[in-house]
Length: 536
Ligand code: FAD
Ligand code: N01
Image (cartoon, rainbow, N blue to C red; front, side, top):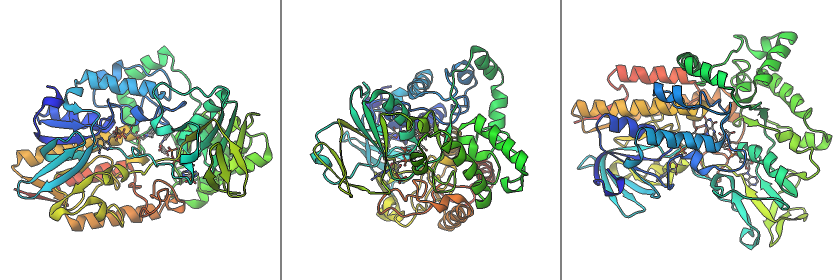
C-alpha cells in the first residue's frame, strides 16, 4: 500500500517519523489497525534526520539508546561506537523502517496543519499541507520534544550578507569552513558538539556565549568486535538493568548522598563517575537532583575538572557554569573546553555586552565592538516539549484550541492525554519522564501504552477515551510539586520553557523517575483506566 493512495478514513493518524512515530505505526499496524502516518521531512529519522551538524551524536550509549522491542533487531545491529554519530543513528532508523516495512504507511514531506475533533462523529478531522483531509478515530502526536528549532531573531539579521546555518537544519551536503571566519551563537549541547570540529576547519571561530554550560567528557570510542559480540549475547541483561533505573540507563551508584560521603570515598566515586563519563555524572550520587548541598559539592568538583582543561585563566573563569549541575540538560563533550586553548578560537562573553545587531559583514555588540564573519552558525535550541503540539491547530471539544488550553501551563494526565481532547495521545509529552529518561525507552513505553489503550477502547466497544479533568489537575499539580523538590526549577532552561520569549514558565517533564511513572501507568491500566473517561 502506498500512503499517498491510501484511504483518507483510517483508525489512527500518527504524526512524526522519528523513533516514536515509527514504533507507534509498527505497533498499531501489527495489531491490524489502519494507520496514516504523516511526516514533514522527506524521510524517516526525526531528530536524526534534521540534526546533521558536525559532531552530532547521542549522549546515551547506543547499546541502550536503541529499540528494545525486537530481539532479532537488537542482536543483529552493530553499533560502531559507544556514542553513535548522527549518520549511524539515521542509518539504524532507516534500517528499522525497512525491516518492518513501515514507509508504506507514511506520507512524507507533508505537515499536519490542523486536527479538529468532530464531537458528532467522535472522529478527528485532520488537514495536511498537501490539502488532504483525513478522518480517524485516534490521533497520535509523535511530533517530538525537540523538533521545533528557535528562529534566530536578531536585529539587522537580514542585512548580513554571509551564509547562515542552523545546527538543527544543517545542509545535507555538509559545510566546508576551511579558511573562513566563523561565528557560533549559543553554547548548549549542539554547539558543544559542533564547536571542536568547526574550530579544526575554520580560519578563526568566535563562540558567542550567553550562559556557560556544564559538559562532561564522553570518552567516546569504537566498540571492538568482541564487545559487540558480548553485548549481543547479554542484551537481556543490559535491558533488564536499564529498566531497573529511574533514568533508563544502567549504572552503579552508592546508596548514600554526596554530602554524607567522607572525603576519600567522595573523591574516589567522583573520579569513577568522571572516568565513566557522559550524562551519568549526574547519577554519581542518588541525591544530586534533589539536594542542593550535595549538588553543590559535586558541581564544584566538576568545575575544578573543567578549569584544568582550559589554559587561559580568564577564559576558564568565563566558561565556568554558575548554576547547579544538571539543572540545564547536562552536556556531553569531546574536546569542547580544550578547543578554547586553540589560537584560532575566541570566546565572546555576552554577559559583558550582548549582541546589539547584525551588520552587513558580521555582528555588533552593545558596547560597539564589531566582528566580521564569513559564516554564522546558530545553535539556539528548541521550543521544547510543547512546540510541535502548539504549532498545529489542534481543537478538542467545543472547539477548544490546545495552545489556548495550555497557555498557562501544559495541563495533562500522565503526559499522554489532556482533558477535552478525546482519543488524542501524546508521545513523551509534558508530564511524562520523556527527556529525563533514555528517550527511546520512554518512547517505547508511551507507544505501548497508547497501542494497548486503543485496543482496549476498540475491543470494549467504546467510542472515546479522555482524561478526566479532576485527575488531570491532580497529575499536573503532582508533576509541578515534584519539580519543586529538585534543582531543575533553579534556572531558566528549555525544560521550563524559559528559553522561549512569552512562553509560560514551569518545569514540564515528570521528575519523579521512570520506574515510578511506569508503575503508576501500569496501575492505571490494571484499574480499568483509572482517571480516564470512557464513553460508548
Ligand atoms: P523526533 O525525532 O523529534 O521526531 C518527530 C518528527 O515529527 C519530526 O521528524 C518532525 O518533522 C515531525 N513533525 C513534527 N510536527 C509535525 C507536523 N505537524 N506534521 C508532520 N510532521 C511533524 N535523547 C536521548 O535520550 N539521548 C540522546 O542522546 C539524544 N540526543 C539528541 C541529540 C540531538 C541533536 C537532539 C536535538 C535531541 C536528542 N535527544 C536525545 C532527544 C531526541 O529528540 C529523542 O531521543 C528522540 O530522537 C525523539 O524521537 P521522537 O520520534 O519522539 O521525535
Ligand atoms: O539547545 P540549548 P541545543 N543569543 O537550548 C543560546 C538535546 N541535544 O540545541 O543558555 C545568544 O541547550 C542559549 O543561551 P542560554 C539535549 O537534550 C542533545 O544545544 O539560553 N545565545 C544556549 O547556550 C539538549 O539539551 C545532544 O543563555 C542564545 C543555546 O543557545 C537539547 O537537545 C546534542 C540566544 C541553546 O542551547 C537542546 O540542545 C544536541 C540568543 N538570542 C542536542 N538564544 C547530545 O549531546 C539562545 N541562545 C546528545
